[in-house]
Length: 301
Image (cartoon, rainbow, N blue to C red):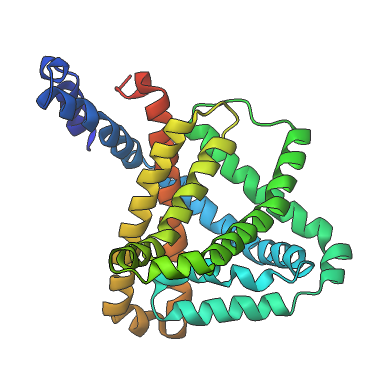
């Protein structure tokens, strides 16, 4: 139904006016990128893959938390992930605190010995299968037909699952210790710098999301991805994540029908919806990164 619209926009964005100088020509050439992403979104495949990843995330959430916390508990650092979990659930609204508390209670109850012996194979199988689904989606967006070999999958996915939580906690600890140094404490009380530090603290979660997205866009596709396209996709997805999160929070807070219809399951429904939106934003950023690196695919045909 929308195909005539995309054909019309295609002709406009690749017309003679788009070859003119700035500002009209530059604006039309820049609009090719959101046009291509929205065109692909309207065809449904990105939506279907985001929905499938929600299902895989639901299956892999418990194994992922168990495995990550079991690793971090060995360093007595599993509590450092609490702010990260809260930031993920923040758009759900007031229920974010309860969901974070439940996740941390689960973390405290994880037995390192049990995870290390009885459940290790099942946890790893579920996690590797989920990460493979993510790679398949990224490869689809990047037009990559050949996935990683089995050996590369096991080695690289295990490195991601084991080192990822450790590096994240190390980064959080480094930032926290830096902010508490005497020099930074003194500078943070200066009038202008105090405002800058406040802005920095408010933007830190979004910067972390952008950095994580950029890393995934570089690492996950089974092809060579340059840093600049990955950074553009990560930045766009990070901004979209922040904007969508605020809108979703307002929707959850002010929509009473969700609670009336779903009663006690409203929190679960909201969490699933937010997970779907998160995967959708991640895939859209990957699609944008692909077009930035290979602009020859922007046009229809």
